[in-house]
Amino acid sequence: METKERKTLVAVDESKESMHALSWCISNLISENNNNNKIHNNLVLLYVRPPSAVYSLDAAGYIFSDDMIDAIEKYNMQLANSVMRRAEDICGNLNASNIKVEKVVGTGDAKNVICSAVKKLGADTLVLGSHDYGFFKRALLGSVSDHCAKNAKCPVVIVKHP
Amino acid sequence: METKERKTLVAVDESKESMHALSWCISNLISENNNNNKIHNNLVLLYVRPPSAVYSLDAAGYIFSDDMIDAIEKYNMQLANSVMRRAEDICGNLNASNIKVEKVVGTGDAKNVICSAVKKLGADTLVLGSHDYGFFKRALLGSVSDHCAKNAKCPVVIVKHP
Image (cartoon, each protein chain N blue to C red):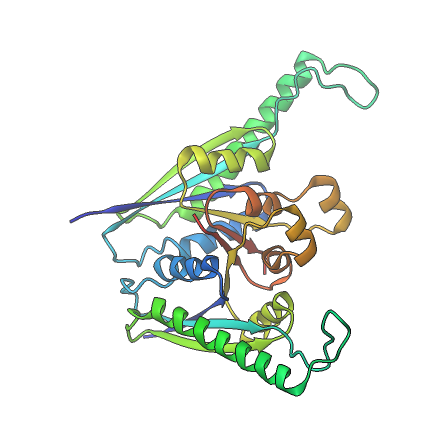
């Protein structure tokens, strides 16, 4: 019997929106009730860490001390671990033999890292949570979901928190 | 046994992008191989007709004659029928008892009609094809998928033509 692999990339971060997007993805795209053994689901959890703080200046113009950089690095790593643990909890009851869960951590600007991950990993679908930012925050931060919907080379699902 | 209804709205138009989005939706969200009888899938095909041309002026400033308006109306109706027929052909092999296909035709500005249909019909997911317009066409026409991704009150899937 020929089997087909289907790779679904879900971008996860600290927000409840991204965790809701992951739940949506599991119930709608990768249902554990799906008895279709011809499809192997590969669910990839992608977390993007901000770029390293080395040589950054603080508000007063001082270069951060090594201790400070270590502390930031440690905090970022703990954050990544905590997000991945929460994401894994949500995937917890996916134990069918035709579902594989992978974790990937990238570093850099989220929107660029997500779009290159889609390309590099050959994802079939990208799933994102959407933050309901107001006009100013959106203008300032740029919208990851806007950018990915336009630039990712695969179908993109944008899931809002209800 | 308790059953759950899941309503998926697919916006269809003359473009190959929208037909590809419908195919994606059927294979990824409403698979006929899905043996999960606890979910009733309701697939709604939405076609949006442009607003009626009554009292429009042509390029030279003349009001269209009644004959002309009749001809435009007739053309628009034929277009709607032809799009719906193509969409139904794609849905053709969806004959499982737990899948229902409905057709809805709206009139007006596509992006607004689609967002209100999501609300009125209580759709769980909206699926759209994405036209890869360049900068000027996008600025001129506005992007239906951009608008719906931001404003529709449910998860939105944007499917690009490969």
